[in-house]
Length: 364
Ligand code: NAD
Image (cartoon, rainbow, N blue to C red):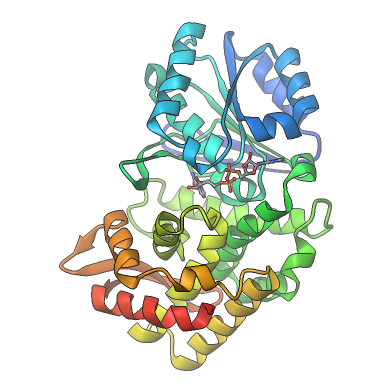
């Protein structure tokens, strides 16, 4: 069992991590007024049926189930959730429990931040990616107008219950995504931790692995420190976007080919190439980073990535410049210097395009 509390501007976030989070949830919900609502998706509703049944009945929650998948993070579903909150008569202090992966957390978080200008949000992250990263820090969003996370707010959960039992039903293809965010945390903070993670990614990624909880706690501590220091991302918190500018372009142009965390791994590889081209990493360090990331991608069965090689650099650049602010032709990127340290730097558009071109040789 592990707990941490994040001291934030509006209210704190209490995070609990362990097995069987039911009593923690029940105790918290018991002191919050009715009506209370729970949001989930249909795949999680099926996979976690028993656990959800107990929670919904035991804590008198009204359940709303949305279709699964990234496409659900849209404005129509946001309005559906808000309409349900309205017809239920959710009060200012009535909680919304978002029980699911990063999609349900982001969408539910946005709805919770908007209804009555903000109702208490309780997150129960059920995917590895949501446990490692998305459950902490208060970023909420939907995709809009073809742009990822274009409409969002900062609205931290008051309680996060990371119940490791949920991983028992996580489908095999979802684990690599969680690994992407886990490795990112290590690459931001500690090279030897990163090496340990890289030794056997495929072996680590299964429910009940004895080292998994330890890695999760470390990643959550890294995120908590960056968020507490810079809650609204004026500076240092942006380091958490390592690999993400490239990843968002791959997700936008990849036709749902890649999950978010898998795209982050490919994005870290492109960022390593950008570090080489800008001199943020000397050639020997860049060689090492690229080799290590290629090994990880291969061990997760993600290389060779023939479909990604066919994406046009012009299109990827277009997606990237729609996603990011471009100042005088330069993009602000997170560049890895070594596994364990990264920096924020403005990079010329031509250099980013060249990084994409050369990245294709690394993933083919
Ligand atoms: P997701 O929510 O779509 O979950 C992935 C799939 O796994 C879904 O089909 C879901 O139904 C299923 N699933 C989840 N938990 C399960 C379980 N225990 N058993 C069975 N099936 C389960 O996607 P994700 O990978 O969890 O999250 C990706 C999203 O998170 C993206 O939209 C991304 O933008 C967002 N994100 C947000 C933050 C943040 O700080 N707010 C950080 C990182 C990512």
